[in-house]
Length: 288
Image (tube, rainbow, N blue to C red; front, side, top):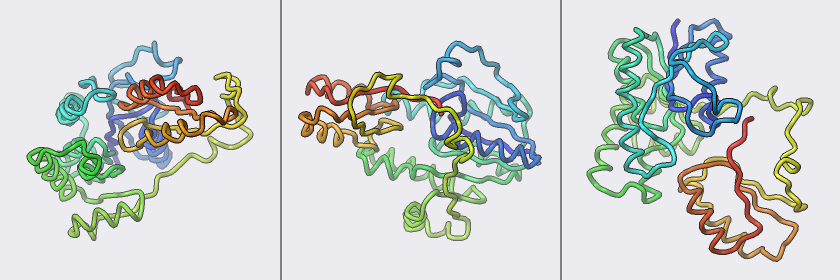
């Protein structure tokens, strides 16, 4: 069976989605499925070892075929440009898949971004089985955050959401809470909605594996470190953490360490400078 994984992020980019899809691809490959991954060109959050590497459009990595597509910028830009890039992305993916004559028997689409579900909708019309893996409940999350408020835009993305859900053979969410929310808004999904908890390669994180001493690497002198690691975006509301750091500036043995990247990072760094917070520090994403 030929299985296609559709994602906007894949190694060597350092993101949670990258590793989830890599581990899914590896497990399917281990089970003797023919696995192809289509993803964007590696440009964001790259480890130093990969920053200067030249990538090919199509490569075979440990038995997994990886097809990389050059797209419009879609990370660390304003919401309008990001939305445009995400709407163009499924068209660019489908064009490349057609060029390489890839016809999967089944495909798994990682969302966000939700528009990539249109790739699944297209192949679903051609009798491929389509699994939609929902991580963020868009557009509801954008509405809740106030990022999406225009009625016409909301109507458009609601319609896109409906097409994606109705076209999928199976829709997966990673928590009971997300299942409840989806069913409240889309009760017709009851028979196709499944909970699929996010996974982790436990063996990779065993204690006998050598780890980087980040305290030494980043020259951290404080005795205690409070760490946030992940995407620095509106959903995380890290202004709250800065407020706490402001109240605790007298605790000289405590450092608030924010590790990651995202569209809110520059704004938060500016706030730290304005408040002269010497107990807050930023570092970029790190490889696992």
